[in-house]
Picture 1 (cartoon, rainbow over the protein chains, first blue to last red):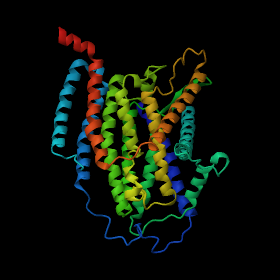
Picture 2: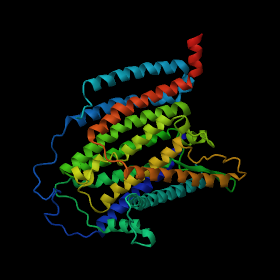
Picture 3: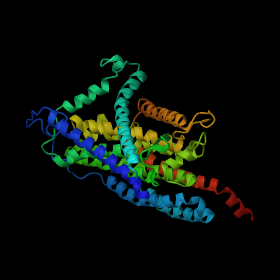
Amino acid sequence: MQSVNYIPIVLQLLVAGGFVTLAMTLTHVWGPKRKSAEKLENFECGIESQGNARMPFSIKYFLTAILFVLFDVEVIFLYPWAVNFKELGLFGFVEMLVFIAFLLLGFLYIIKKGALKWE
Amino acid sequence: MGIELLIFKSILVLVVFTITLTIAAYSTYGERKIAAFLQDRIGPNRAGPFGIFQPVADGGKMFLKEEIIPADASAFLFVLGPSLAMLTALMTGVVIPWGDTLTLNGVEYSLQITDLNIGVLYIFGVVSFGVYGIMIGGWSSNNKFSLLGAIRASAQMISYELAMGLSIVALIMTTGTLSIKEIVDQQATWHWNILYQPLGFLIFMICAFAECNRAPFDLAECETELVGGYHTEYSSMKLGFYLFAEYINMFISSALMASLYFGGYNFPFMNSLGLDQNMVTILGTVVFFGKVFFFIFFFMWIRWTIPRFRYDQLMRLGWQSLIPLAILNILLTGIFTMREELKNWLFN
């Protein structure tokens, strides 16, 4: 019964995918093609570009991504609980408060460690 | 699923798709007119009366411009980036209830493409895919500006996704369902969720701005530092897709805010007007689009009023203000909903 609800998503995917493919093809066919070596160089503000763009970047971004994975799993874990919140009653609420308290403890630790300091 | 329903759904998919593209196109016109108004200028006024054919001209130009793929770029990923951004933007409209049910020849048709029982999760899942479009496009360009823009955008989007998810958890606690249709129906007439979740709405709205990469959170494409951000190297319709996806995301975010917090297609006194169901549905859809247009206007109003954040301010707001605030909101919602049980437990 439920899986029937997913058929329109397939329809939408076909329409959207078809549109994207068609637009990409048309712009490729219709646009002028006057390419030269200079034109195909990477953009730089009027000077020769230096080195390769695939270079190391700040570790902060990596840390943010790792922390996101950790916390997003926690957030997803909250969803089934939130749906059944009223049925679970006070016991469920207190249980989840304990879980969130542990979560906040970890959160406090990473803030104190300066993992989210960007200055 | 009967053949009639399938045909109806196919028509609805096409209609919603056309409306989405039209609104996205005319948002660019609206944005320029509103920017002009706020800055005491006239704005586009050459193509047609009041410049209303400007989006058509812009769209046509996008198709006819030369397509440039830099020699150092990874060609396949370079094309995949904007395609993915556009595809994910178009996929989110499926679960939005655009209106109540219409009765044609004695058969009830819902004006929602599909009512998933996990509608909210579906939206989050698809929106998360949008990060890949930006990241792939920025990385494959092989340009330092693009890479920095893409990394900034990704870090920003994933950071604000957390607070957004948490603000929705508090809403789900009061509604008890993940189906957007059911959430809207619970808000019948004037019982809008904004009255019960004001803090949650504020957090959700700020995160929606950040997810859409709209000012004041448009650090990914700040011209003064990064040229064009992740789409520096893009031209023709590929650039168009990135810009278009941003406006579609804005439209869908507005629709989501209207559905989750502002009653969707419900409006006060809707059942006491003495109109038949079909009329109320049509009126409801008009009201729904009115709410959506207000939020789109609000997005633009903010963009042309508030200056851009600095990156450390952005990350501090996301991680150290909004996430604790969202958790506080969950706590307050829980205590408020459980107030009777808590009273019994404490004073017995």
